[in-house]
Image: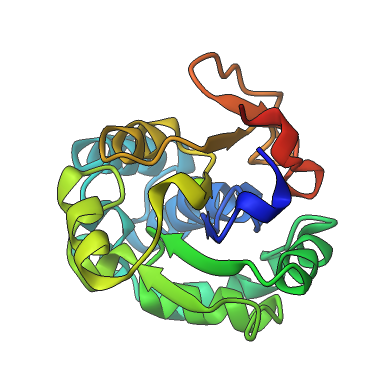
Length: 219
Ligand SMILES: [Mg+2]
């Protein structure tokens, strides 16, 4: 693929533009530790309870919903989000990459499972307002990106040429659904969380970070 044959970029946020280390910290460390304190139980026990609940909702829209988990845990997650927002980090080189797409007049559409409230905090914290032609949270469509419904609604709502669209997302389930729905120029991320080892990705093309994207890797 050549740069001039790309009209649109669909970009995931967490794990693609922003370091997934924050989300992993927030859901798997911070919230269990607050839950442990409020319920007077050990961190280990709190983590066990929450991980079990998270698992039940994985891939569903509730999994990403602050309000759902606030009710479930009796913890005000909006407050916890604000308390921890300093840990939200944009990947090195990501902003330069967005700027380079803009210079090439490529349309940039953020497609995220992050709910609006959290998205607003993250985009503000990382000063990312202004880089996207459109921001779509799966919360708007009431279906997570890892569903056929999400991609059907997206096609109804926005115009894009599938052959001239590139989609980068660290979630291989999401990529599978977008592929099923006709988007074939897909790229995954090897290091979505800077604290974790390289992911093994065999079904999709993958790069270490979005700043290393080069259209020539796509046939
Ligand atoms: Mg992601």
